[in-house]
Amino acid sequence: MSHLSLQQITKQFGAVNVLHGIDLEVRDGEFVVFVGPSGCGKSTLLRIIAGLEASNAGEIRLDGRVVNDVSAADRGLAMVFQSYALYPHMSVRQNLAFGLENSRMPKAEIEARVMEAARMLLIEPLLHRKPGQLSGGQRQRVAIGRAIVRRPGIFLLDEPLSNLDAELRVVMRAELAALHKRLAATMIYVTHDQTEAMTLADRIVVLRDGRVEQVGSPLELYNRPANRFVAGFIGSPRMNFVEASVTPAGLDVGGRRHPVSDINLAPGASITLGVRPHEVDIADVDDGTLALEISLVEQLGAETVIHGKTHLGTSFTLTAPGQGRFAVGDRIGIALPSEVHVFDETGSSVPRSGV
Image 1 (cartoon, helix red, strand yellow):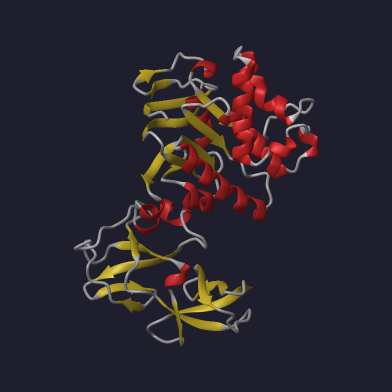
Image 2: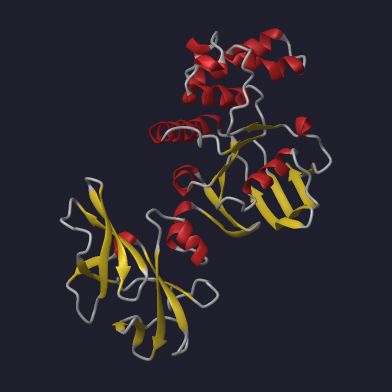
């Protein structure tokens, strides 16, 4: 296991600033996930940690030692790539052993490590095969095994499941979580999939445009997002946003009064309410509800996902338990909960009195 410290890491590609002063601590044995939209800098940051890219400024410390000028091969890290990066002409056994052979490790130790990884990942029957004879999930296990045999201080995983189908991704997520628990290893995992982040991470680092928006446990980010971006990125279906204004009597939401009195903003302030799809109740259309015209209904069996637009012209999604009888073109009322997320004009979360 290893402890990682990043201090004011910046990266530029020509005139483009990709990372803007990243500060981060990753503790021994922690599973940390970098998540964010494409182009936010998460893979670049991982490659800087690995030593495959050089930062323009800042300091990288592994177990207290500055490693900015240490080569990738000498940092004691192992990286698992999205593309697997297996040698097609080598067997699984040879792929697992190749890096160790280059380091001139004794053959007996190499064999012991290869077999240990093969047993752990359930790929012993595949050791004689070549990558072209394996399924996507099997190739991913071999790629992870190649990292395991090195016994690195930190595992770095760059969107390792993105090439797999949906069902196999679920299986591999469970296997990765179990592997982390067995190895008690420090892992840093990059993904754009917030479901992977929520299910795997001890802590999530949300990135946007090369900056850290928030760091916390999955439920901390879900329940207490720091801003509108994090609130909209974490959670599926994504959070709904509705414009409102503060009045002495509470909130005005498109001409509907919403009884919230514990917001620390002066009357007249413009705000945005954040509402999770499952927090909404379906009701009659009246002065106390938002009117929603349904544009899409997704019947998922255990629940129904309803998409539409409110009378304010805002897109809105809600979920209803079971198999509701809703149709495109129907007009329903949606009652907002009393406990809503509130964001000010800058997009920052507004604290509630007593919270």
